[in-house]
Length: 306
Image (tube, rainbow, N blue to C red):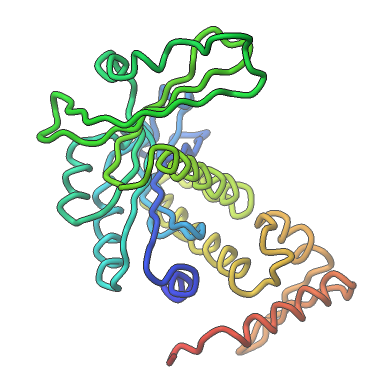
């Protein structure tokens, strides 16, 4: 189902966003541990999304592992699947995924990537001229400066392109500095703009937590919680596909929680028969318009044979 949706949204290119999140626990669950970054006892699941918000892979991990731990188990099979379908693959990740082995794996597979780099003194020396504050009266609007240069860390086998962004904000003494390592051929500003869209992955994780309790893992056994995470991912994907493919465009921007509260939970009742489920909703102007639009969109979807 997700593959069919991807073919409609982006027939030639797919963007993959990987991120981790916390799943707090409140008992003696197996392999739960204290995580200093989140400052809680939790599990630390890893999730992989496409640009449309579909969760393509998920892995439950102990609470004390690194944010990028087991990245290859989720990312490499998905890259292979997408490339078999003839698509160009682009990967985005935050500073936790700034790992030489990840760069090399992506380059071997001809995958483009945009990954944030942790700042260090060597990187700062390459942009020394950008760190001087603007001359004259401070601007109330942020001032942005960009620079691209070749850089090779001690653990890298080759030099790679790094894009730096320096921001001066009114009332702040020091500039905000960020570095991105990439093999894209875009200009500096476009690389930063493309990376900033990675924040939508955090929004999808938040939606999953609120709408389908994506990280509410209260079973004692680790394996049971892993299965529960996968079931929640399936529920999230069904809701996201419903929103993307079946709903009219005027509600396609609603969150999954809004769809639940304003459509499904408003006078809704699920009736089970031997072969069918019937969703009975209280009649209103909103539900009538929504379901009429949904039926029109469903009728336009390509058939499985097509």
